[in-house]
Image (cartoon, rainbow, N blue to C red; front, side, top):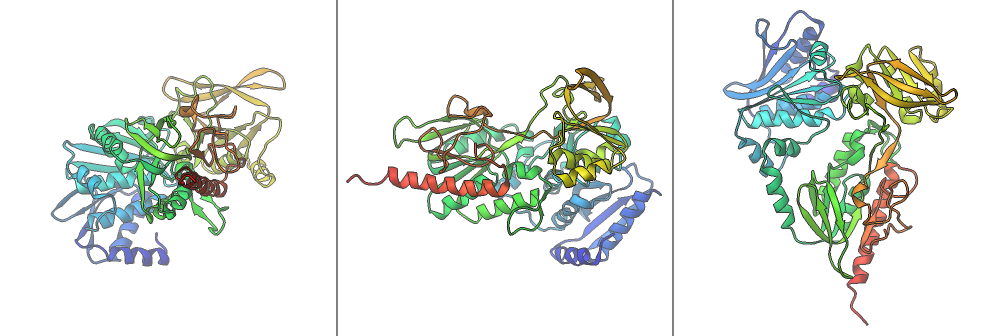
Length: 523
């Protein structure tokens, strides 16, 4: 199961175990059970603190295995064979159950230990999902820290019957005590705040009590991270308020065009951004969504940014780097069937549609790449493009057209998502050449039609373009004194990671220039 290089790396990690780890496997005669049995035996051979117990007559999902320790009650279970993106989750679970400490903030860890109640979490994941490991790792850690918490991570592709029964059409999907708890990427602090009802109020009060920043950066993507590093290096008080550090990069699979980094994955790149920022004296405030910008009342006064959480932050200068989000089709049925067949991440959710018929909306690079990826998993892909020709690169078009289970519909205007009340059953579109209304029967719709800037909260406060982008000049200035902007939320062309990072650095230097000029002594 594991190649020699991976075994060598894993063996080195497992040397950090400080107490025995017991892997209790629930097996049957299936292929998956044989694969899991092989994997666990390979892990056992790497460290004498690890033992394996096999059971065939219990009531657990098969194949699955519990990671525990003799005399220690932990509820960490994987249902499936956690390779792919989940291999890191497996390694961390082994280390944490084996006594290796987590790097999460001590205050947050203590909060998990003190949670009062019985919490049984289940997470459905796919091995190709780059968003799933954050959720799986957070819930595993909670189960290690608190004996009243259990977590089972379930490979949706392996347990298709359960996926169908629970009507799961997107990953990660989280259940708490049998009820839906959440879907999509969630960090430990976010999960804990949902469980601990008073946490958000306490955190908002704590943030509001902070003193004014010299520069407050709103958004933690590449632009925000670069702005934070450049500001901190100037020795000024720097804060970053981000809904999720990494931003849209977290939803990106492969990154091959950031100069000096030949190839990486979005979550790894985002993690590297955060580590770099944390090397400096930067106050990072995660899980904070901005809702209002209040310009300074007087020249040289403080700018206020109000958060959805109730927190209020003040600063002498502000850099807006709120990025962008997936663009919706805005047709009837889209919102109703979101996560019930309408999805925006082919890499995450594609395995859930194995053997089914799906549509991809959009003929640009992202849409064509999605169709190519899905064609290897699903029964059939129908790609719908509004224009009369595909916009993707020629090499991608050639690959797409070579696939036998792909149909391409040009001049196709999506008009409605069809469903039976529970899940998607098809899509309706208008043939723009004949105005004829047509329907395609299918089970999934992957929307890939570009991005929208996250600037709705700024309307009426700052000058925006007709596309909702923040209008900036060559130095990153906005229409509000002391407020700068950078990245995909601005009018700067070409929404690329490398460009966003450069613009963030530029905005930071402009903010510093504003600070020193506005506080310079008079002649």
